Length: 244
Ligand SMILES: Cc1cc2nc3c(=O)[nH]c(=O)nc-3n(C[C@H](O)[C@H](O)[C@H](O)COP(=O)(O)OP(=O)(O)OC[C@H]3O[C@@H](n4cnc5c(N)ncnc54)[C@H](O)[C@@H]3O)c2cc1C
Image (tube, rainbow, N blue to C red; front, top):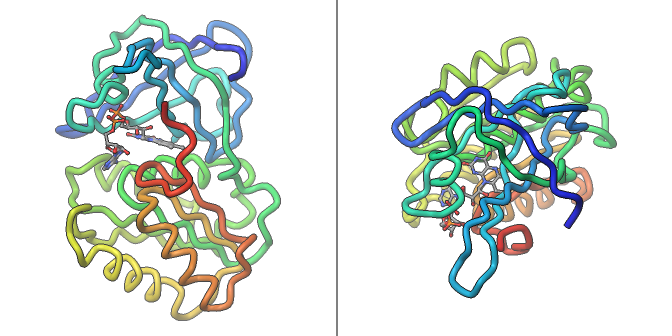
C-alpha cells in the first residue's frame, strides 16, 4: 500500500438514521483526487486473524476543492469500518491512503452518458458528476439512483441539490431490499427504461456488485462497447479486492 496520509475531521453531520456526512481537511497540501475516486481508511481495528480493518470510501464532494473533502457513510450493522466512521470525533485524525480508482470521467467517450448508482454507490456518482471532467457532458447525462427508501442513506434532496445543473435528468427509482429475489429484475427494468430512447456512449455503474455486473451485461447486449462501461462495486463484488 502507498504511504499513509492523514486528514482531520473538521465537521460531522448526521444526515439520516444511519448516515453520517464527514468533512475532512488536509493539514497541508492537496488530496489530488478526480471526481469518482475513493480513499482507503485505516481504522487500526484488528480483525479476527490479525489484519487491520481498512475500508474504501468514495469522495462525494467536487474535485474543485482539494484541501477539504467529504465522505458519507452508512452504518452497516456492527461492521468495524462504518462504525469507526460513525464514532470518529470532530478534531480527530484519520489515516488513509489514496486517492484510488478508475471511476473517473477522463477518457470516456463523448456523447450521451448514463450514471446508474445503487444504494450507497450514489457517493461515487456524486463525486464523478461534480468533477471537473464531467462538466462538458452535463447536458447529455442521465443519472439514476436505485435506492430502497428515502431514509436508507443520503436524503434524496441532498443528492438532487448536489446535482443541480450537472445532469440533464436525475431520477430516483424504488429498489427492492438486497434480500429480495426481484431486485435484479427490477434494476434491469429501470435500466431498460433509462436507455429506451438513447443508447449511451458511456456508462458508469456504482454500488451493489450483484446488480451492476448484470446491468453491464445488459448494456453490452444492447450494443454498448464493454470498455465504455465503468464499474465501482461497493459490496457483493465478484472481483473483490479492496476489503481486508
Ligand atoms: C470503492 C468503494 C467505495 C465505497 N464508498 C462508500 C461510501 O462512500 N459510503 C459508504 O457508506 N460505504 C462505502 N463503501 C463500502 C465500505 O467500504 C464498507 O464496505 C462499508 O462501510 C461496510 O464496512 P464495515 O466494516 O462497517 O462492515 P463489514 O463487516 O465489512 O460489512 C458487512 C457486510 O455488508 C456489506 N456491505 C457493505 N456496504 C453495504 C451496503 N451499502 N449495503 C448492504 N451491504 C453492504 C459488506 O460487503 C459485507 O458483506 C465503499 C466500498 C468500496 C469498495
